[in-house]
Length: 139
Image: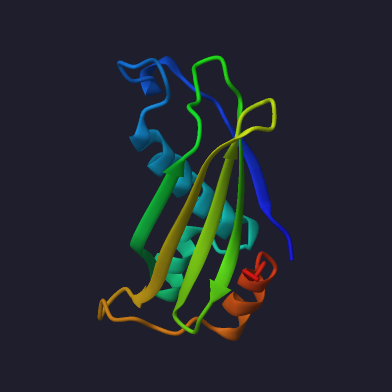
């Protein structure tokens, strides 16, 4: 059980008129995290979609903003799976500045669907085993 930890740069075009990171950038960072997680597990999204016919889709996103991030900040993102079901998962995210201060939390619920039928599909035992490396259940 481990977390995926990575850093993202903050660019000038990500700053809104108030002077901090725009809310939509967090959505982009969530997407980057999900893609990195699949790659770390050995299941790049293109392989899942084209070779295995499985596509992950989001059913819910929640973000709670605690403190703003600014252009001169360095953002560290932690990601893990808090719940695994047969065809879905809940992912947790934490965003920290360079001082280690919690700036935001996020949760996303995802579902695996069959690419052809567009219906939910169960993940394979191989997929489950890979996901369970990052499973840290909520207490």
